[in-house]
Length: 235
Image 1 (cartoon, helix red, strand yellow):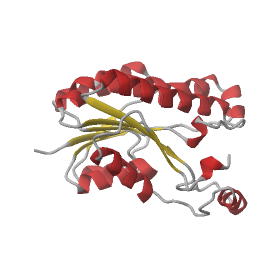
Image 2: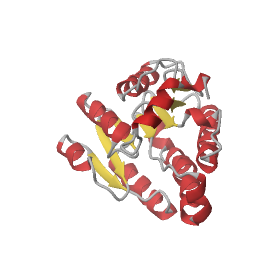
Image 3: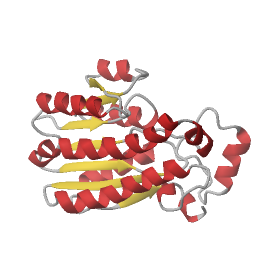
Image 4: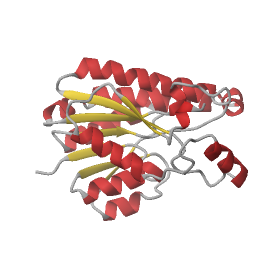
């Protein structure tokens, strides 16, 4: 019988590559997206079921939970990966951006974990992985709201780990400089790598391998694993 996974923010970057890896391993995959279908059509061609939801809209999240619940009795893996990244200036001048930071990183994961608890509990090894950030521990003064929201998700990871044990495990991954954005210029990239002990851009495979590690080790819950080349030591 196929295992089932739900990955949020599945259309690009880590969510996209993780989704492809899970499909290659034979998972039935629910691939969440918001407005952009970048990557989603390719995932559908590989067998994924696309599910749309705007994580700034509670009714939209509830609708997605209902869709997934009606489609499957059990979920082995839920990866809360969807994210939005706004600096202080953006959230100070746009109340919707400020609200979105906390809705996407806090309210949506909470609702998904709670709303799909029954399906997660029915699987043999139900696992939630929340994608937080190394800045959850050492916040940046340039992204105060974002760091606070990710810190909340980190705390939520531990709370749900206690609340859902022993039937469901809940862990987190804290990425560092795994994949630069196109807008990051050479100067920025060099500065980040100079402040990273391993001095390389990690790529997405170490993140995927960490998902596999957490999935395959049944005696880990309530933990956050940094995948950052040691950058968390330096900030």
